[in-house]
Length: 153
Image (cartoon, rainbow, N blue to C red; front, side):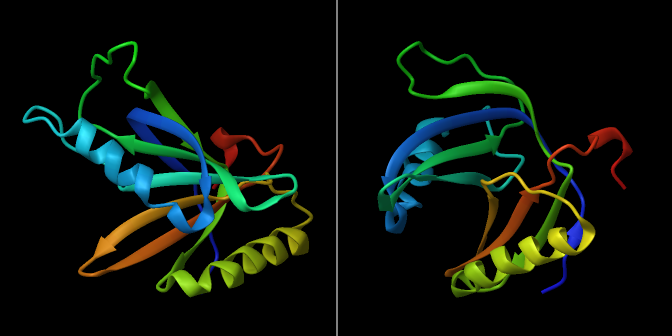
């Protein structure tokens, strides 16, 4: 795996947060996609999600999901989703995982890369999911604390 230094920016983002079991990380994504299906709306980004660990709950996490759309949408008050104009994930470092089993290795690689450069990372990693036939590829992003996104190269 190769570490890259780049940010990710999404526009017209629908977001939802849920506390779920780690093994069920994909279920809110399916529900979100089903609820957004509309002939005038299409996705302009892969599904992105962030995981925040919960103290004393090793099997559960707080998951925040993001999907960029082609246009802002009007959401009903009870939609269970929020909309943001822009989500900036960065300045960041990231790696691509061809296999879900590589995630722990990716986290360690990102942490070591940052440590070697004297950088501190935000505690929650972002995961960018790409469907590939019957499999999923993930890019894992780690936000570098205290760096200025405009000066990031």
